[in-house]
Length: 100
Image 1 (cartoon, rainbow, N blue to C red):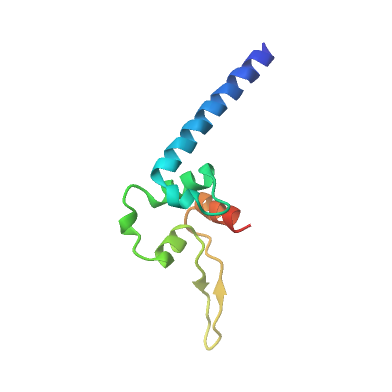
Image 2 (image 1 turned 120 degrees about the vertical axis):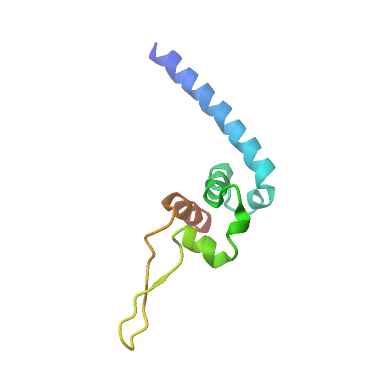
C-alpha cells in the first residue's frame, strides 16, 4: 500500500513538473535561457512580478520587491547600509539560487 502511494505521488510530481516546465517556457523563455534559472526559479520570479510587470519601472523597484536592495541606516555623518528584510522571501531565495 505504501509503495503504491509512493508511485502515485512520484507520477503526480512528474506531471506537475512537466506542466511547470511548459508554462515557464511559454511565459519566460528569455529568463529560462539564463544560466542557473530553472522552471522553479522562473515560476517564483514570475509570480513575484505578477500579472502586470509594467508596474515595476526600474531594476531597483524589482530588487526592493525581492528584498534584495540595501536600506540606509545612517546616523549623523556616518553613512551605512543594512540588509532589507522586507519583500518576498521566496523571490529573494530564487535570486540567491541563481547567484550561487
